[in-house]
Image (cartoon, rainbow, N blue to C red; front, side):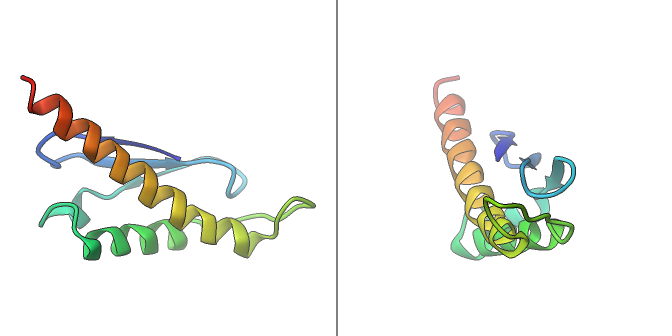
Length: 92
């Protein structure tokens, strides 16, 4: 997972790979209207879970596990990107 976030949170996207047959991009700016709250992170997790409905399984992990991990990695990537964005904007 990787995330890109504008300092004012007007743009926020998460890319997820290794979940389904192709990488996916999720626009989550709408979930960040009130900032990076616990509620916003829960909404982002749910978006990642729903977006990975086409998850595939293999000998390493089944599809449901990959969907569950999409939640975890989306949350982590977004939280890290928001932290980096805030750090960069405070030094402008």
